[in-house]
Length: 124
Image 1 (cartoon, helix red, strand yellow):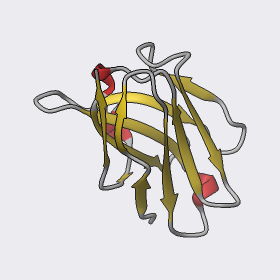
Image 2 (cartoon, rainbow, N blue to C red):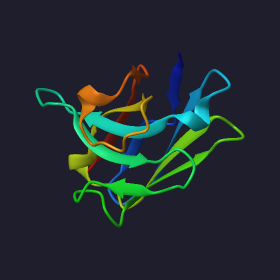
Image 3 (tube, rainbow, N blue to C red):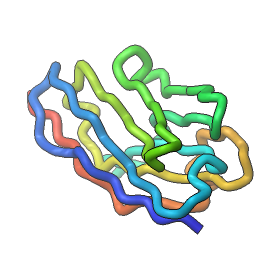
Image 4 (cartoon, rainbow, N blue to C red):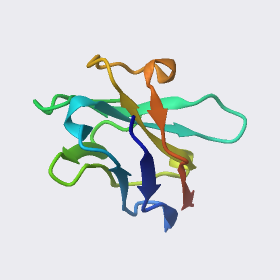
C-alpha cells in the first residue's frame, strides 16, 4: 500500500509556472506507475501525464504536451509535474495516483491509490 500527498498548488497568472510534487510513503515507490490527473468543477477527472516505474517512459495529454513535464525521483519517493505557460483552462484540482500492476494507463479507474489533491488556479 502507498499513501500519496500532493503539494505545490496555488494561484498563478496566465503564462506562469508551478511545480507540483507528490510524496509517497513506503519502500516500494519504484514499483508503481505514477500519474497526474486533474478535475475542474462540474467536469470528469482528466488524464494529464503518466510515467513508468523505472525506465522513465512518459506520456502527456495533448492538451498539456510541450507545457507540462512529468518526472520522478525514486530515491526521494516523489513524482513531479512541472507546469509552464499555464492557461486559465488549466485551473483544476490536481491529483497524483499510483498504479500497482505495472501498466501505463491514462484511465483513472485503473489507478489504485490517490492523493487528496492540490488546487491550481490560473488567472487571466
